[in-house]
Length: 315
Length: 315
Image (cartoon, rainbow over all chains, first blue to last red):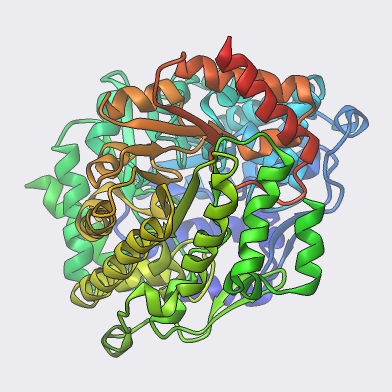
């Protein structure tokens, strides 16, 4: 969006996240532009790592970098677990500000955090990764160090989510973007206990929790078993197949391929309709993209999509 | 392997692929080093694109580049469909040479080709891709152009595989490495017919066909329905779950995470055992990695893995 790019000319991503007024402003931009059913707080999954002692930088064109990645037992021992009120107060403040505005329009606010595995992937790799060799290496070669690290991440993530709800977020989302890189057995043994722990802590706030991952067709039941009232799926599985596997106890969020938003409207519409038809009007379907919106996505298509989803599901 | 790196000091990848004596030599390197049950011809999935008129280069540190990527109807119309005997004779010659050597050791030779979608991904993106925006864009925005292009790819790939079997390959493998980027509906509508067509042509040679993809948990049945005697799966699904979904009519290849080869032997062994236990001695399991072996993989671990698989499955 042009409004967002205008702000990005003046501030870095971290400056925007750490200035509650700016984070609140960006949170409201999509709400002002589209007839959305919910807002999501402008934040990022990586600032919790800063509070733990890692040096985070967003490098233009390269994405996030961690200058002191975790590789050893000493690195894990050095990770600090602090209350989110001390290290992530800016996002909690942004939530409070955004809620004041959103309440006047009766739009709920979603808070979020990266799941333990996904933030571990950044923390250990030192940035984005193709094969996740370092993070899986730590997991396979130093399982005790791994478990200590994941325990710390699950505490930080869980309490961060809980604090977001206490600050005003009415729904919480746990993002496990890279969990699909794992073999199911590794997920169950090295990751699931920590996602479960984070969700258990967050649940104390008493708001619904969306548990989202990409590439999760091979671990869908395992991911659900870690917790969450809503399971988010990407576009790589038919929505009805996913829901059948997940069972009636959970709601489902998804699952349009974000690339479809670049298509001409009739083709995009056909694809949105396809997702909605697979949900078949079942209560508990939250229409969404299967992953984050891509840069350069045509804004007009987003607008028409939101209108069409409302129209089609109302009929 | 050191022997391979020594050759790569002197020749580019394309020089090695296009010189049958060198391609044969590299094909035999793993056979000489490990007690493997089969050899795979040293080749690449992209040279067929050269024969169709695309300019291919392997750039150090960047991977493959196509200097004139396909974007328009005119680009697709310009694609030349020629017999593999004219454009890919070097690999057919390498197969003939390798067979002479392998026959003396009673080791079968596997030929292979990239599946239509995976080579389309390179041809349209112009190289590797993260979100496959260009290739999906062509598919969504210009479906007629897409279908014409995929028809050409399926013909080229199918006849190339058939020619490899006629030159001596005793098994054929169709690699659909990037197919997991697709929504199931897109796979069925825009890709499956062309994988099926390629396999139907290749089948005329009368040798078994392995149909492999990564990230296929969401489309496993659809992939199987496109054909193949063996379905190759990556590590993102439990082998027994995959096999149950695939049914008894097909054999299954897989499915160790290639990153596990970096682990200390006891941990690697535990993971290999896990895969074999899930296969549970069922006839028709071909043990393999879930995707290509990674650079810097410790050679000793490969050796021990091969020995252990033989030992464990013999007992």
